[in-house]
Image 1 (cartoon, rainbow over the protein chains, first blue to last red):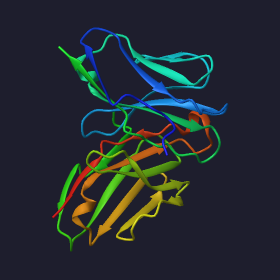
Image 2: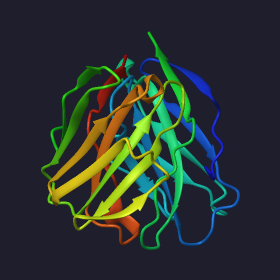
Image 3: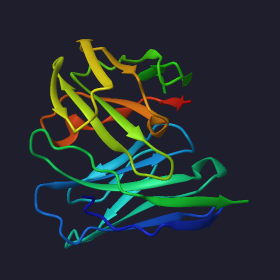
Image 4: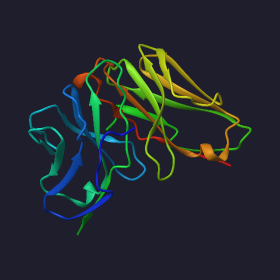
Length: 111
Length: 116
C-alpha cells in the first residue's frame, strides 16, 4: 500500500513555479522520499529523492518539512512539457524494498 | 533517455499467440524489474531480478514467464494471454537492491500491449 497522499490533480501556469505537495505522516526514520513523473504513455522518469535535507538538482527542488511528515516538489519554471503525473513515493533504505506507486498528482501546465 | 530500452514499443496479439517483450539496460545495473500498468491504474510490480536470479514474483499468472539471461537483458514471454492483460508493460533497472540511493530505479519507455 502506498504510504503517501497526494492531490489528484493540479494546474499551473506556464513559466510559474509548480509546487506539488505530498503527505507522508507515517514515515519512519530510514525512509526516503522519492519523486517520479510519468508523461502520457511513457515510462516513469526519476526526478529527485531525499531523506532529511532539502535537495536540488537540474530538474527540481525537494523541500522536506522538519518533522518529515510532508514534502513539496518544486518545478521552478514550469513548461508545457512538464505536464505529467507526478508520483511521491516513500521507501525504506533497507535491502530489497520495492517502489509502490500510488495514483499520483496529474499536473497540467497551462499556456 | 536511452539507458533502458524496450522492444517492441507496440504489440498486438491474439489470445493464442506467443510473443516476447525485450528489455535492455545500458547502465551497468544488477537488478531489473517488470511492471504492468493497466488503464487508469497505478503501476503494479510483477517480477524482480537481482544478479540474474528471480527474487520476486508478485502472484503473476503463469501465462507471463520472465527470463533474465544476463544482467543487461530481461525478457517477458507471453502465451495464451487474455484481453484484460492489455496494458503498458514497463521495464526498470537499478544498480542494486541494497537500499538508499543505489537502488533508484530507471524505467524504459514501455511496450503497449493489446490482446485481441
